[in-house]
Length: 329
Image (cartoon, rainbow, N blue to C red; front, side, top):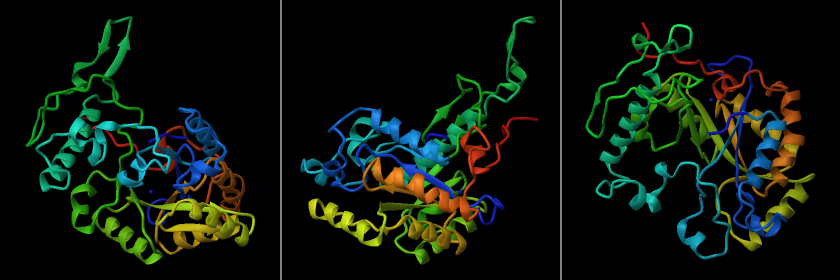
């Protein structure tokens, strides 16, 4: 499994499955019902990753909490999440990690983000696969003919390169973007390989996926889905009600049985609404365990999921081709 999109481009694979990890779960009241200690560091995340790996899920995602800052500041919900990349943080960290004179919602900020990704991609390519030699018999550590300064001079960045480490195993790391309004998609499409959306309806998902596919054929559109599972519809509804009475949760979500969730996933995939799902378990590890032990086998029975891992990198799991270095002859 890799830490950190089919019908049109990967025949016979099925549906991609990610899971976004949270210490107690994605429902704001999860911490009151999960039975886990208030803060256990990385342990819950490692435990959840092992559960996901047991189900051969494609990837686990780590990120910031999605609840508004005011709600987290109230002291009523769990605001503790692992912070994997503070430099790409939201508005509340802007003063510490981003240029104070560049508003996050400005056109300049969007342009800077696009240029940043392009600089990173050039750096990843600055070593060709043949550049890192390490031949002790000849004394050749690197072959200069296959290591390239990038000489980037853009509006926001001036970078000479090359990168100070060899080219990544995947050629370039898989680039995942959160979905943005339609007017802003064109700028991100060139680098997007996976788009993570939060559509409220199947129709909304189909529209978003079609628009991204028109901008970049082959891009994978992944729908985020909050999940509350139960052995019966009544049991799932009871769990949802118990959570909601402790804290409101206004996001669209799935509440039902494993069979119903498997049918939901299959229906969205068959209709062209998405290429996969990012599962947000309401309560950890309960809903993730139910998903892996009960839903995944049902998806395998439908021919929508493989029995295990065919590769060792995220690109191989997603069957996205490894890009060659742009500098390779």
